[in-house]
Image 1 (cartoon, rainbow over the protein chains, first blue to last red):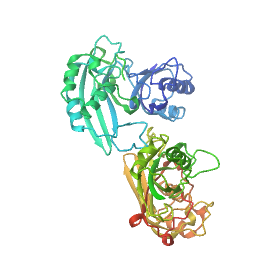
Image 2 (cartoon, rainbow over the protein chains, first blue to last red):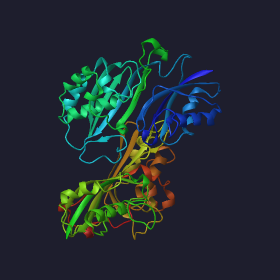
Image 3 (cartoon, helix red, strand yellow):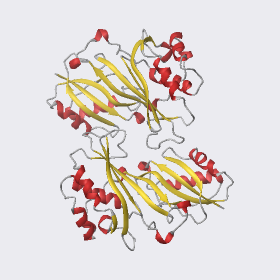
Image 4 (cartoon, rainbow over the protein chains, first blue to last red):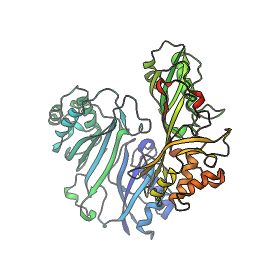
Length: 262
Length: 262
Protein backbone atom coordinates (compact mmCIF):
# COMPACT_ATOMS: atom_id res chain seq x y z
CA UNK A 1 0.00 0.00 0.00
CA UNK A 2 1.25 3.47 -0.87
CA UNK A 3 0.65 6.51 1.30
CA UNK A 4 -0.16 9.58 -0.81
CA UNK A 5 -0.15 13.20 0.37
CA UNK A 6 -2.43 15.64 -1.44
CA UNK A 7 -2.72 19.43 -1.43
CA UNK A 8 -6.25 20.68 -2.09
CA UNK A 9 -7.96 24.07 -2.49
CA UNK A 10 -11.67 24.63 -2.05
CA UNK A 11 -14.25 27.37 -2.00
CA UNK A 12 -16.02 26.67 1.30
CA UNK A 13 -19.14 28.70 0.48
CA UNK A 14 -21.35 25.74 -0.31
CA UNK A 15 -19.81 23.21 2.08
CA UNK A 16 -20.75 22.23 5.58
CA UNK A 17 -17.03 22.15 6.37
CA UNK A 18 -14.19 19.85 5.38
CA UNK A 19 -14.94 16.80 7.48
CA UNK A 20 -17.72 14.29 6.86
CA UNK A 21 -20.88 15.07 8.84
CA UNK A 22 -24.13 13.23 9.39
CA UNK A 23 -25.76 15.87 7.16
CA UNK A 24 -24.70 18.48 4.63
CA UNK A 25 -22.25 18.53 1.76
CA UNK A 26 -18.59 18.20 2.85
CA UNK A 27 -15.25 18.41 1.06
CA UNK A 28 -14.15 15.06 2.47
CA UNK A 29 -17.24 13.28 1.10
CA UNK A 30 -16.73 14.77 -2.36
CA UNK A 31 -13.07 13.71 -2.43
CA UNK A 32 -13.82 10.20 -1.20
CA UNK A 33 -16.52 9.87 -3.87
CA UNK A 34 -14.02 10.97 -6.54
CA UNK A 35 -11.44 8.43 -5.30
CA UNK A 36 -14.07 5.67 -5.32
CA UNK A 37 -15.01 6.67 -8.86
CA UNK A 38 -11.37 6.66 -9.95
CA UNK A 39 -9.85 3.59 -8.27
CA UNK A 40 -12.88 1.74 -7.01
CA UNK A 41 -11.56 1.87 -3.45
CA UNK A 42 -13.62 2.84 -0.39
CA UNK A 43 -11.06 5.09 1.24
CA UNK A 44 -11.32 7.35 4.27
CA UNK A 45 -8.96 10.28 3.79
CA UNK A 46 -7.11 11.92 6.69
CA UNK A 47 -7.32 15.73 6.65
CA UNK A 48 -4.74 17.97 8.32
CA UNK A 49 -7.63 19.37 10.33
CA UNK A 50 -11.25 20.34 10.02
CA UNK A 51 -12.35 23.60 8.58
CA UNK A 52 -15.74 24.90 9.65
CA UNK A 53 -18.74 25.50 7.40
CA UNK A 54 -18.01 28.41 5.05
CA UNK A 55 -14.23 28.42 5.64
CA UNK A 56 -12.04 28.15 2.51
CA UNK A 57 -8.69 26.52 1.80
CA UNK A 58 -5.90 27.38 -0.58
CA UNK A 59 -3.53 24.71 0.76
CA UNK A 60 -5.34 22.11 2.86
CA UNK A 61 -3.49 18.77 3.03
CA UNK A 62 -4.80 15.23 3.36
CA UNK A 63 -3.32 11.76 2.94
CA UNK A 64 -4.68 8.33 2.15
CA UNK A 65 -3.43 4.76 1.72
CA UNK A 66 -4.12 3.08 -1.60
CA UNK A 67 -3.48 -0.23 -3.37
CA UNK A 68 -4.23 1.35 -6.74
CA UNK A 69 -1.56 1.26 -9.45
CA UNK A 70 -2.37 4.77 -10.71
CA UNK A 71 0.92 6.70 -10.78
CA UNK A 72 1.11 9.31 -8.02
CA UNK A 73 1.62 12.20 -10.45
CA UNK A 74 -1.66 11.29 -12.21
CA UNK A 75 -3.86 11.57 -9.13
CA UNK A 76 -4.25 15.37 -9.20
CA UNK A 77 -5.46 15.55 -12.80
CA UNK A 78 -7.55 12.39 -12.53
CA UNK A 79 -9.31 13.53 -9.35
CA UNK A 80 -9.94 17.05 -10.70
CA UNK A 81 -11.92 15.68 -13.64
CA UNK A 82 -14.15 13.90 -11.12
CA UNK A 83 -14.55 16.71 -8.58
CA UNK A 84 -17.11 19.54 -8.49
CA UNK A 85 -16.08 23.07 -9.51
CA UNK A 86 -15.48 24.25 -5.94
CA UNK A 87 -12.69 21.74 -5.19
CA UNK A 88 -9.32 21.76 -7.01
CA UNK A 89 -6.50 19.32 -6.20
CA UNK A 90 -3.16 21.13 -6.57
CA UNK A 91 -0.60 18.39 -5.99
CA UNK A 92 -0.09 14.74 -4.99
CA UNK A 93 3.14 13.14 -3.81
CA UNK A 94 4.39 9.97 -2.10
CA UNK A 95 4.80 10.22 1.66
CA UNK A 96 6.38 7.79 4.18
CA UNK A 97 4.16 5.11 5.59
CA UNK A 98 3.89 6.77 8.98
CA UNK A 99 2.97 10.19 7.54
CA UNK A 100 -0.30 11.41 9.03
CA UNK A 101 -1.45 14.74 7.62
CA UNK A 102 -2.80 15.94 10.97
CA UNK A 103 -0.30 14.49 13.46
CA UNK A 104 2.75 15.14 11.27
CA UNK A 105 1.90 18.80 10.64
CA UNK A 106 4.32 21.34 12.08
CA UNK A 107 2.82 24.69 11.14
CA UNK A 108 -0.42 26.00 9.76
CA UNK A 109 -1.16 29.41 8.27
CA UNK A 110 -4.57 31.02 8.11
CA UNK A 111 -5.62 34.26 6.47
CA UNK A 112 -8.57 36.40 7.49
CA UNK A 113 -9.60 39.16 5.08
CA UNK A 114 -11.54 42.36 5.73
CA UNK A 115 -12.95 44.40 2.86
CA UNK A 116 -12.59 48.00 4.04
CA UNK A 117 -14.19 49.55 0.94
CA UNK A 118 -17.17 51.86 1.27
CA UNK A 119 -19.03 49.27 -0.79
CA UNK A 120 -18.10 45.56 -1.03
CA UNK A 121 -16.05 44.16 -3.90
CA UNK A 122 -18.78 42.12 -5.58
CA UNK A 123 -16.27 39.53 -6.85
CA UNK A 124 -14.72 38.88 -3.42
CA UNK A 125 -17.93 39.00 -1.43
CA UNK A 126 -17.79 35.28 -0.57
CA UNK A 127 -14.19 35.59 0.67
CA UNK A 128 -14.06 38.84 2.63
CA UNK A 129 -15.81 40.35 5.61
CA UNK A 130 -17.12 43.76 4.60
CA UNK A 131 -16.51 46.44 7.22
CA UNK A 132 -17.32 49.82 5.65
CA UNK A 133 -16.70 52.01 8.71
CA UNK A 134 -13.22 53.16 9.67
CA UNK A 135 -10.79 50.71 11.28
CA UNK A 136 -7.52 51.61 12.97
CA UNK A 137 -5.27 49.13 11.18
CA UNK A 138 -2.16 50.21 13.13
CA UNK A 139 -3.86 49.44 16.46
CA UNK A 140 -4.94 46.01 15.15
CA UNK A 141 -1.39 45.27 14.01
CA UNK A 142 -0.07 46.24 17.43
CA UNK A 143 -2.77 44.22 19.18
CA UNK A 144 -2.11 40.95 17.37
CA UNK A 145 1.61 41.06 18.24
CA UNK A 146 0.68 40.36 21.88
CA UNK A 147 -0.42 36.88 20.82
CA UNK A 148 2.90 35.79 19.32
CA UNK A 149 4.62 33.11 21.41
CA UNK A 150 3.43 30.16 23.48
CA UNK A 151 0.30 30.91 25.48
CA UNK A 152 -2.87 29.43 26.89
CA UNK A 153 -5.46 30.54 24.31
CA UNK A 154 -8.56 29.71 26.38
CA UNK A 155 -9.84 33.30 25.97
CA UNK A 156 -9.53 33.04 22.20
CA UNK A 157 -11.25 29.74 21.55
CA UNK A 158 -14.83 28.57 21.42
CA UNK A 159 -16.32 27.38 24.72
CA UNK A 160 -17.17 24.26 22.69
CA UNK A 161 -13.50 23.29 22.41
CA UNK A 162 -13.09 19.70 23.59
CA UNK A 163 -9.32 19.87 24.15
CA UNK A 164 -7.66 19.02 27.50
CA UNK A 165 -5.51 22.15 27.32
CA UNK A 166 -5.33 25.29 25.20
CA UNK A 167 -1.61 25.96 25.02
CA UNK A 168 -0.51 26.74 21.48
CA UNK A 169 2.36 28.59 19.84
CA UNK A 170 1.86 31.45 17.39
CA UNK A 171 5.01 31.91 15.31
CA UNK A 172 3.88 34.81 13.16
CA UNK A 173 0.89 37.17 13.07
CA UNK A 174 0.74 40.29 10.95
CA UNK A 175 -1.53 42.40 8.78
CA UNK A 176 -1.04 43.19 5.13
CA UNK A 177 -3.01 45.72 3.08
CA UNK A 178 -3.86 44.99 -0.57
CA UNK A 179 -5.99 47.72 -2.13
CA UNK A 180 -9.15 47.90 -0.03
CA UNK A 181 -8.48 44.51 1.57
CA UNK A 182 -6.84 44.04 4.96
CA UNK A 183 -5.42 40.54 5.45
CA UNK A 184 -4.44 39.00 8.78
CA UNK A 185 -1.86 36.21 8.32
CA UNK A 186 -1.37 33.99 11.33
CA UNK A 187 0.93 30.97 11.61
CA UNK A 188 1.06 28.57 14.54
CA UNK A 189 1.77 24.99 15.57
CA UNK A 190 -1.98 24.41 15.87
CA UNK A 191 -5.24 26.27 16.19
CA UNK A 192 -8.15 25.60 18.52
CA UNK A 193 -11.78 25.57 17.50
CA UNK A 194 -12.71 29.05 16.16
CA UNK A 195 -9.40 30.44 17.42
CA UNK A 196 -8.57 32.65 14.42
CA UNK A 197 -12.16 33.88 14.23
CA UNK A 198 -12.29 34.85 17.93
CA UNK A 199 -8.90 36.58 17.61
CA UNK A 200 -10.21 38.47 14.58
CA UNK A 201 -13.50 39.38 16.27
CA UNK A 202 -11.51 40.83 19.18
CA UNK A 203 -9.08 42.64 16.86
CA UNK A 204 -12.08 44.25 15.15
CA UNK A 205 -13.01 45.74 18.54
CA UNK A 206 -9.46 47.09 18.72
CA UNK A 207 -9.80 48.51 15.21
CA UNK A 208 -13.11 50.13 16.15
CA UNK A 209 -11.57 51.73 19.26
CA UNK A 210 -13.65 49.66 21.70
CA UNK A 211 -10.45 48.05 23.03
CA UNK A 212 -6.82 49.14 23.18
CA UNK A 213 -4.04 47.04 21.59
CA UNK A 214 -2.77 46.11 25.09
CA UNK A 215 -6.16 44.64 25.93
CA UNK A 216 -5.30 41.67 23.67
CA UNK A 217 -2.69 40.71 26.31
CA UNK A 218 -5.00 41.31 29.26
CA UNK A 219 -7.69 39.13 27.64
CA UNK A 220 -5.13 36.39 26.88
CA UNK A 221 -4.00 36.35 30.52
CA UNK A 222 -7.58 36.28 31.80
CA UNK A 223 -8.12 32.81 30.25
CA UNK A 224 -11.84 33.37 29.90
CA UNK A 225 -13.69 33.32 26.56
CA UNK A 226 -16.19 35.94 27.74
CA UNK A 227 -13.40 38.56 27.93
CA UNK A 228 -12.78 38.41 24.17
CA UNK A 229 -14.81 39.79 21.27
CA UNK A 230 -17.31 37.97 19.06
CA UNK A 231 -16.46 35.11 16.69
CA UNK A 232 -15.88 36.73 13.29
CA UNK A 233 -17.80 35.41 10.27
CA UNK A 234 -16.40 32.20 8.72
CA UNK A 235 -16.55 33.17 5.03
CA UNK A 236 -13.52 35.49 5.24
CA UNK A 237 -11.22 32.79 6.66
CA UNK A 238 -8.88 30.71 4.46
CA UNK A 239 -6.49 27.93 5.42
CA UNK A 240 -3.45 28.98 3.41
CA UNK A 241 -0.81 26.37 4.10
CA UNK A 242 0.12 23.32 6.18
CA UNK A 243 3.84 22.67 6.67
CA UNK A 244 5.61 19.43 7.54
CA UNK A 245 9.12 18.53 8.69
CA UNK A 246 11.84 17.16 6.44
CA UNK A 247 10.43 14.36 4.33
CA UNK A 248 7.07 14.75 6.01
CA UNK A 249 8.02 12.22 8.67
CA UNK A 250 5.76 12.08 11.68
CA UNK A 251 6.99 13.53 14.97
CA UNK A 252 3.83 13.04 16.90
CA UNK A 253 5.17 13.78 20.36
CA UNK A 254 6.02 17.38 19.56
CA UNK A 255 2.93 18.19 17.55
CA UNK A 256 -0.11 20.06 18.77
CA UNK A 257 -2.05 19.03 15.68
CA UNK A 258 -4.47 16.83 17.56
CA UNK A 259 -7.25 19.32 17.75
CA UNK A 260 -10.58 20.56 16.57
CA UNK A 261 -9.19 23.30 14.38
CA UNK A 262 -11.00 26.10 12.61
CA UNK B 1 -37.22 65.49 -12.77
CA UNK B 2 -33.62 64.82 -11.93
CA UNK B 3 -31.35 62.71 -14.13
CA UNK B 4 -29.10 60.46 -12.04
CA UNK B 5 -26.01 58.59 -13.27
CA UNK B 6 -25.05 55.38 -11.45
CA UNK B 7 -21.96 53.19 -11.49
CA UNK B 8 -22.68 49.52 -10.79
CA UNK B 9 -20.64 46.33 -10.41
CA UNK B 10 -22.07 42.85 -10.79
CA UNK B 11 -21.05 39.23 -10.82
CA UNK B 12 -22.63 38.04 -14.08
CA UNK B 13 -22.47 34.33 -13.23
CA UNK B 14 -26.14 33.97 -12.38
CA UNK B 15 -27.56 36.56 -14.77
CA UNK B 16 -28.94 36.25 -18.24
CA UNK B 17 -27.08 39.46 -19.08
CA UNK B 18 -27.60 43.09 -18.12
CA UNK B 19 -30.64 43.99 -20.19
CA UNK B 20 -34.22 42.90 -19.51
CA UNK B 21 -35.22 39.78 -21.42
CA UNK B 22 -38.47 37.92 -21.89
CA UNK B 23 -37.00 35.20 -19.64
CA UNK B 24 -34.18 34.79 -17.18
CA UNK B 25 -32.81 36.88 -14.35
CA UNK B 26 -31.24 40.18 -15.50
CA UNK B 27 -29.31 42.96 -13.77
CA UNK B 28 -31.66 45.60 -15.16
CA UNK B 29 -34.73 43.87 -13.72
CA UNK B 30 -33.15 43.59 -10.28
CA UNK B 31 -32.16 47.27 -10.26
CA UNK B 32 -35.60 48.41 -11.46
CA UNK B 33 -37.21 46.29 -8.72
CA UNK B 34 -34.94 47.89 -6.11
CA UNK B 35 -35.80 51.41 -7.36
CA UNK B 36 -39.50 50.57 -7.26
CA UNK B 37 -39.08 49.28 -3.71
CA UNK B 38 -37.19 52.43 -2.69
CA UNK B 39 -39.06 55.28 -4.38
CA UNK B 40 -42.24 53.63 -5.56
CA UNK B 41 -41.52 54.67 -9.14
CA UNK B 42 -41.81 52.39 -12.17
CA UNK B 43 -38.59 53.40 -13.88
CA UNK B 44 -36.83 51.99 -16.91
CA UNK B 45 -33.10 52.51 -16.51
CA UNK B 46 -30.79 53.22 -19.46
CA UNK B 47 -27.64 51.08 -19.45
CA UNK B 48 -24.42 52.12 -21.21
CA UNK B 49 -24.74 48.90 -23.18
CA UNK B 50 -25.76 45.29 -22.83
CA UNK B 51 -23.48 42.69 -21.39
CA UNK B 52 -24.14 39.11 -22.40
CA UNK B 53 -25.14 36.24 -20.11
CA UNK B 54 -22.22 35.41 -17.81
CA UNK B 55 -20.27 38.63 -18.48
CA UNK B 56 -19.33 40.67 -15.38
CA UNK B 57 -18.99 44.40 -14.71
CA UNK B 58 -16.80 46.37 -12.38
CA UNK B 59 -17.88 49.75 -13.74
CA UNK B 60 -21.09 49.54 -15.77
CA UNK B 61 -23.00 52.84 -15.93
CA UNK B 62 -26.71 53.53 -16.22
CA UNK B 63 -28.92 56.57 -15.77
CA UNK B 64 -32.55 57.19 -14.92
CA UNK B 65 -34.95 60.09 -14.46
CA UNK B 66 -36.69 60.38 -11.12
CA UNK B 67 -39.18 62.65 -9.33
CA UNK B 68 -38.14 61.23 -5.98
CA UNK B 69 -36.80 63.60 -3.29
CA UNK B 70 -34.18 61.10 -2.07
CA UNK B 71 -30.83 62.96 -2.08
CA UNK B 72 -28.54 61.74 -4.87
CA UNK B 73 -25.76 60.72 -2.47
CA UNK B 74 -28.19 58.39 -0.64
CA UNK B 75 -29.14 56.34 -3.70
CA UNK B 76 -26.09 54.03 -3.67
CA UNK B 77 -26.48 52.93 -0.04
CA UNK B 78 -30.26 52.77 -0.24
CA UNK B 79 -30.25 50.64 -3.41
CA UNK B 80 -27.54 48.30 -2.09
CA UNK B 81 -29.67 47.35 0.91
CA UNK B 82 -32.40 46.32 -1.55
CA UNK B 83 -30.24 44.51 -4.12
CA UNK B 84 -29.13 40.86 -4.20
CA UNK B 85 -25.54 39.95 -3.23
CA UNK B 86 -24.30 39.82 -6.83
CA UNK B 87 -25.03 43.49 -7.60
CA UNK B 88 -23.26 46.38 -5.84
CA UNK B 89 -23.91 50.04 -6.68
CA UNK B 90 -20.64 51.98 -6.38
CA UNK B 91 -21.68 55.59 -6.96
CA UNK B 92 -24.56 57.89 -7.94
CA UNK B 93 -24.30 61.46 -9.13
CA UNK B 94 -26.40 64.16 -10.84
CA UNK B 95 -26.03 64.36 -14.62
CA UNK B 96 -27.35 66.94 -17.14
CA UNK B 97 -30.82 66.40 -18.47
CA UNK B 98 -29.60 65.28 -21.87
CA UNK B 99 -27.10 62.75 -20.48
CA UNK B 100 -27.76 59.28 -21.90
CA UNK B 101 -25.47 56.60 -20.52
CA UNK B 102 -25.21 54.80 -23.87
CA UNK B 103 -25.23 57.66 -26.38
CA UNK B 104 -23.04 59.97 -24.27
CA UNK B 105 -20.35 57.36 -23.65
CA UNK B 106 -16.93 58.14 -25.15
CA UNK B 107 -14.81 55.12 -24.22
CA UNK B 108 -15.33 51.68 -22.79
CA UNK B 109 -12.75 49.33 -21.34
CA UNK B 110 -13.13 45.58 -21.13
CA UNK B 111 -10.84 43.02 -19.49
CA UNK B 112 -10.55 39.36 -20.51
CA UNK B 113 -8.67 37.09 -18.10
CA UNK B 114 -6.94 33.78 -18.74
CA UNK B 115 -5.87 31.54 -15.87
CA UNK B 116 -2.61 29.99 -17.09
CA UNK B 117 -2.06 27.85 -13.97
CA UNK B 118 -1.62 24.09 -14.27
CA UNK B 119 -4.78 23.84 -12.17
CA UNK B 120 -7.45 26.56 -11.91
CA UNK B 121 -7.55 29.06 -9.06
CA UNK B 122 -10.69 27.80 -7.31
CA UNK B 123 -11.61 31.29 -6.06
CA UNK B 124 -11.40 32.91 -9.51
CA UNK B 125 -12.99 30.09 -11.46
CA UNK B 126 -16.11 32.11 -12.27
CA UNK B 127 -14.02 35.03 -13.57
CA UNK B 128 -11.20 33.46 -15.57
CA UNK B 129 -10.86 31.14 -18.54
CA UNK B 130 -8.59 28.27 -17.53
CA UNK B 131 -6.01 27.40 -20.19
CA UNK B 132 -3.50 24.97 -18.65
CA UNK B 133 -1.36 24.35 -21.72
CA UNK B 134 1.39 26.74 -22.75
CA UNK B 135 0.52 30.07 -24.40
CA UNK B 136 2.94 32.40 -26.17
CA UNK B 137 1.98 35.61 -24.36
CA UNK B 138 4.46 37.71 -26.38
CA UNK B 139 2.88 36.63 -29.66
CA UNK B 140 -0.58 37.47 -28.31
CA UNK B 141 0.62 40.92 -27.20
CA UNK B 142 2.07 41.50 -30.67
CA UNK B 143 -1.09 40.22 -32.34
CA UNK B 144 -3.51 42.48 -30.52
CA UNK B 145 -1.52 45.60 -31.45
CA UNK B 146 -2.67 45.13 -35.07
CA UNK B 147 -6.20 45.98 -33.96
CA UNK B 148 -5.40 49.41 -32.51
CA UNK B 149 -6.85 52.21 -34.61
CA UNK B 150 -10.02 52.73 -36.62
CA UNK B 151 -11.04 49.63 -38.58
CA UNK B 152 -13.96 47.67 -39.91
CA UNK B 153 -14.29 44.89 -37.30
CA UNK B 154 -16.63 42.63 -39.29
CA UNK B 155 -14.21 39.70 -38.90
CA UNK B 156 -14.20 40.15 -35.13
CA UNK B 157 -17.89 40.36 -34.44
CA UNK B 158 -20.73 37.89 -34.22
CA UNK B 159 -22.59 37.20 -37.45
CA UNK B 160 -25.66 38.09 -35.38
CA UNK B 161 -24.60 41.72 -35.14
CA UNK B 162 -27.47 43.94 -36.30
CA UNK B 163 -25.41 47.07 -36.91
CA UNK B 164 -25.36 48.92 -40.28
CA UNK B 165 -21.57 49.14 -40.20
CA UNK B 166 -18.74 47.69 -38.12
CA UNK B 167 -16.24 50.53 -38.00
CA UNK B 168 -14.96 51.10 -34.50
CA UNK B 169 -11.86 52.65 -32.96
CA UNK B 170 -9.62 50.77 -30.52
CA UNK B 171 -7.58 53.27 -28.49
CA UNK B 172 -5.63 50.83 -26.35
CA UNK B 173 -5.14 47.05 -26.24
CA UNK B 174 -2.49 45.32 -24.15
CA UNK B 175 -1.83 42.31 -21.96
CA UNK B 176 -0.83 42.37 -18.31
CA UNK B 177 0.35 39.39 -16.28
CA UNK B 178 -0.62 39.08 -12.60
CA UNK B 179 0.63 35.87 -11.03
CA UNK B 180 -0.86 33.04 -13.07
CA UNK B 181 -3.46 35.35 -14.66
CA UNK B 182 -3.08 36.96 -18.08
CA UNK B 183 -5.35 39.97 -18.57
CA UNK B 184 -6.24 41.58 -21.89
CA UNK B 185 -7.29 45.21 -21.44
CA UNK B 186 -8.99 46.75 -24.43
CA UNK B 187 -10.40 50.28 -24.72
CA UNK B 188 -12.46 51.58 -27.63
CA UNK B 189 -15.17 54.02 -28.63
CA UNK B 190 -17.59 51.12 -28.87
CA UNK B 191 -17.71 47.35 -29.15
CA UNK B 192 -19.80 45.19 -31.41
CA UNK B 193 -21.67 42.07 -30.33
CA UNK B 194 -19.15 39.51 -29.00
CA UNK B 195 -16.28 41.63 -30.35
CA UNK B 196 -13.89 41.23 -27.39
CA UNK B 197 -14.68 37.53 -27.15
CA UNK B 198 -13.98 36.88 -30.85
CA UNK B 199 -10.76 38.90 -30.62
CA UNK B 200 -9.74 36.84 -27.58
CA UNK B 201 -10.67 33.54 -29.22
CA UNK B 202 -8.47 34.47 -32.17
CA UNK B 203 -5.62 35.64 -29.93
CA UNK B 204 -5.75 32.26 -28.19
CA UNK B 205 -5.02 30.67 -31.57
CA UNK B 206 -2.04 33.02 -31.82
CA UNK B 207 -0.93 32.02 -28.31
CA UNK B 208 -1.25 28.35 -29.22
CA UNK B 209 0.84 28.82 -32.36
CA UNK B 210 -2.03 28.07 -34.75
CA UNK B 211 -1.81 31.63 -36.10
CA UNK B 212 0.99 34.18 -36.32
CA UNK B 213 0.65 37.65 -34.77
CA UNK B 214 0.43 39.20 -38.26
CA UNK B 215 -2.59 37.03 -39.04
CA UNK B 216 -4.64 39.31 -36.79
CA UNK B 217 -4.18 42.02 -39.42
CA UNK B 218 -4.90 39.70 -42.35
CA UNK B 219 -8.13 38.54 -40.66
CA UNK B 220 -9.14 42.15 -39.92
CA UNK B 221 -8.67 43.10 -43.57
CA UNK B 222 -10.61 40.04 -44.78
CA UNK B 223 -13.83 41.38 -43.18
CA UNK B 224 -15.25 37.91 -42.79
CA UNK B 225 -16.19 36.37 -39.42
CA UNK B 226 -15.23 32.88 -40.59
CA UNK B 227 -11.57 33.92 -40.86
CA UNK B 228 -11.30 34.56 -37.11
CA UNK B 229 -11.12 32.14 -34.20
CA UNK B 230 -13.92 30.95 -31.92
CA UNK B 231 -15.88 33.19 -29.54
CA UNK B 232 -14.14 32.88 -26.17
CA UNK B 233 -16.20 31.93 -23.10
CA UNK B 234 -18.20 34.81 -21.55
CA UNK B 235 -17.39 34.21 -17.87
CA UNK B 236 -13.83 35.62 -18.16
CA UNK B 237 -14.99 38.97 -19.58
CA UNK B 238 -15.54 42.05 -17.40
CA UNK B 239 -16.71 45.54 -18.38
CA UNK B 240 -14.21 47.61 -16.41
CA UNK B 241 -15.12 51.21 -17.13
CA UNK B 242 -17.29 53.55 -19.18
CA UNK B 243 -15.97 57.06 -19.73
CA UNK B 244 -17.83 60.25 -20.62
CA UNK B 245 -16.84 63.70 -21.81
CA UNK B 246 -16.56 66.78 -19.60
CA UNK B 247 -19.65 67.05 -17.44
CA UNK B 248 -21.06 63.94 -19.04
CA UNK B 249 -22.80 66.03 -21.71
CA UNK B 250 -24.12 64.11 -24.67
CA UNK B 251 -22.35 64.39 -27.99
CA UNK B 252 -24.45 61.90 -29.89
CA UNK B 253 -23.18 62.61 -33.35
CA UNK B 254 -19.64 61.52 -32.61
CA UNK B 255 -20.46 58.47 -30.56
CA UNK B 256 -20.47 54.89 -31.75
CA UNK B 257 -22.26 53.76 -28.60
CA UNK B 258 -25.44 52.80 -30.39
CA UNK B 259 -24.72 49.12 -30.59
CA UNK B 260 -25.35 45.66 -29.35
CA UNK B 261 -22.25 45.45 -27.24
CA UNK B 262 -20.73 42.51 -25.41
